[in-house]
Length: 264
Image 1 (cartoon, rainbow, N blue to C red):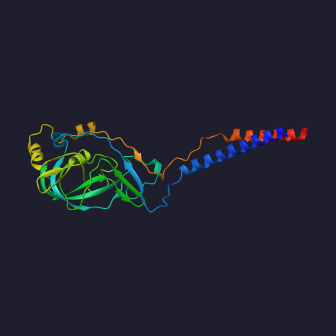
Image 2: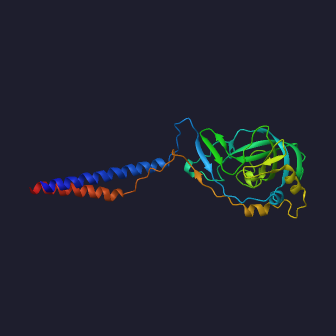
Image 3: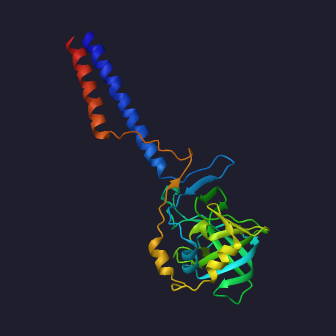
């Protein structure tokens, strides 16, 4: 009787392990299916970017153009795909900067401080925005508000995943460090510093021996990413146990119990 109980316990344990293995396989297959959002809140994707802080002189030298202007319009965010919709890939396959949501900002130019263009308006592109069930943010790109007075250090977009999409545009040199909000009392403000507009203008108007050298910027700037996903995307994997060995263990337990009962 003791042997029957002992082997019965062994059989139950083996069956339990087999069940866990089946759950693991099911969970693994679920990881390869499209993410479904059952809440009203968009799924958040946060891009963390490491970058080098430039001096005012470096901002001037590494920029293709510098302007003072006003935020005229903030266009609807889009994915960097041909149709502006979500890429046809699984959520956990998204990569920065290959797969991003971007927002174009229309700037009404009051004054060109470097390399003047013929247009009275230009478009500045930043990473971030909400499209459908997805919301993307970064800790580096600047934010804009309609009607905001700004001084912008700008360079051409060299990201192959965005530079040919949509209208001709610029990006802000050195992320939020290159966008200054101008106040009525003569201040120029970024999240990192507050200076006077006069101080910036003096630096910009100085003769530069490195005008428009964006190659140096591309070599210095490093963008490391970390896909920040919320609790809606959590791994539910269970340590895998080979199904073949599990089946063998269960079969062996059954044979042992049957033999023990027969001998009695």
